[in-house]
Length: 377
Image (cartoon, rainbow, N blue to C red):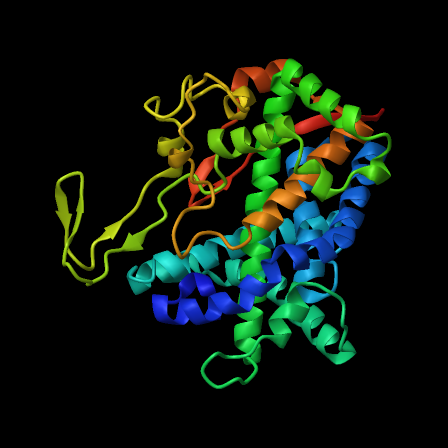
């Protein structure tokens, strides 16, 4: 299924136009009430449970937000536990498929047969099945609601002005769902884990939120953008454990004046190169005490070394993440509403502090479970 992730530069530039308009600030502002609705459901659900795996529930939140925005129909994984388990497992397999199709297409056929077993394909297919059904239902309903799907559906090819065909629309929507939900939920899980591991940081963030809002209803994204410590906490979470921690490969193209030179080394056209985000973000040349969670490094006039040029959680260049504004909106609203309405603590503080927070690098970060206790404030 074709998507922006798997195409060459020429086709990518065309497909980029499908998504760029949907992520414009004005469009995102119109989607905020819908995003907020799902965050409210998230807070109510985990509060009612009392104990939960915050990593899984944040995954469910992002899936519900993006399924609603991308297909016009929420998958309801926050409220439906069996469906949540099935969708989260299917999403994990879907991430594998999207990444391998886009970056590992040169693998031998024998390896592909192992990776694409019948059981795995069935699990992956469940996401596509749900997505296709929701998309067709939305198309038949002809909704004019402001969301990603409406913007994608209304997009036209730049070469002939014709609508995009269904497989392409489906590919872009699936890409948004799979890539967006996994990375945003990982970033939020990282941030919450480190807030719970650093109580003074949590207290400082909570104080900033409560000093600026009298009620949860008053919390809006536009106002949150003016809170420096909230911004610092999010940036530090993205630095200490970026959702895409490993290599993001790029191919050297054949353009004048010729070969690419980096630090005195020549890389001819066709060479695959890249930078590992995790290594970059943990390099002491760019960040003081890089293995520690220190949001203060991002505060104005901080004397803690923080080289923003070495900060690339959303990558750089023409293929940088188009959804960064959407990610910041969801992360900001979720964190602000969470600390305003609820109090969280580790299910087993000693165990979490002993184990630390580690992820597996599968291009995207595979995060661990994080059991927490939840009470209303």
